[in-house]
Length: 91
Image (tube, rainbow, N blue to C red; front, top):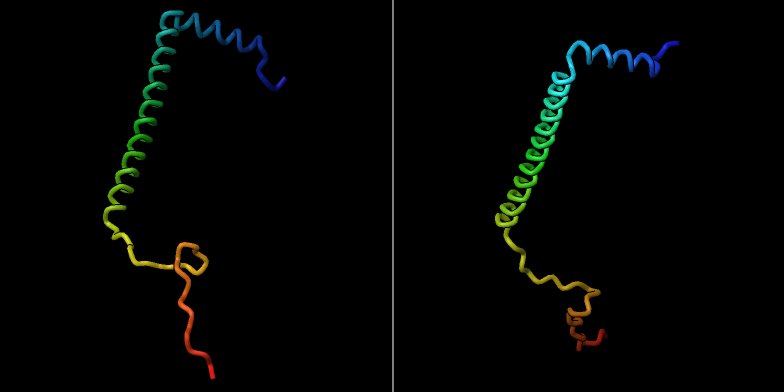
């Protein structure tokens, strides 16, 4: 009793078609579809613009920082040479 049934929806649809006519209703739905399409395209363009800006900032940011070339031998690194043995014996 509190909601719309199938009959209510069908009667409402028939009244809308009688008031607006089939051609006018079809044109309105076409306009709605065009609006949705342009909205989705605008959102995709905005995402592409943000991705392009991010890539550009990342590319420019990597050029501004100097590259660290100081040697830093690690203790557990197999490539790093072992420390030289001490020749002096503690007395």
